[in-house]
Image: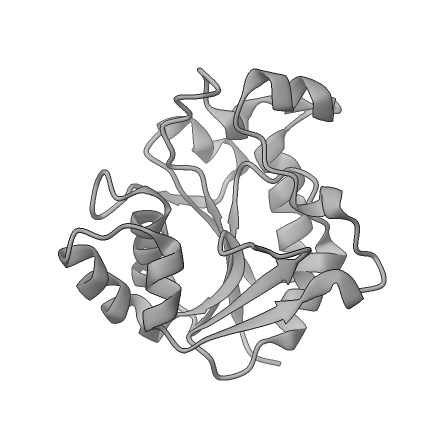
Length: 188
C-alpha cells in the first residue's frame, strides 16, 4: 500500500465566521478534531497548514503558508511542499461532517492524476481532494500569475473528477461547508 499524507487546511482568515472555524466546538470536540480523526483512519500521517499557532494541540505538525494571502491555493501549495509523500488527501477545516468512509473512497479512486476531485450534485469539492506532491510546481506557477482560483488551477492540472454520489455512504451533508455563524448554528 502506498503512503499517503492527510492534510487539514486551517489557514483561512474566517472573516465571515468572525472566529477560527476549525476551533469551533461541535458535539463536544473542535471541528478539526472530528476531521483529523476521520483522516487518521485512512492516511499514514496527518499535518495542518495553519497560520494560527493554536493548531498544535493535537500533536500533529503545523506549517504556516509559504506564500501568504493566496487563499486555499496557497495552503494546498504549502501542503504539497511540506508533505513527504507523493499522494496527499487535503481537507478543509470547514467541512466538519466529512467521514472516514468518504475520505477512504476518494483516496481509493485516485490513480496517476495531479488532482482527483469529488463532484456531487454539480458541485466540485477541490478542498476535499487528492493531490500529487509533484503538482506543487504547477500550482506555484499559477500563483505567480496572480490567479488564486482553484477552479482555474484545476483546469491547468491533470485533474480527474469523480461523482461521489455513487458511494454507498454518500449524503450531501458530508460536504456541508461552514462559513458563517448561521451555517454553524444550523449544523448544530
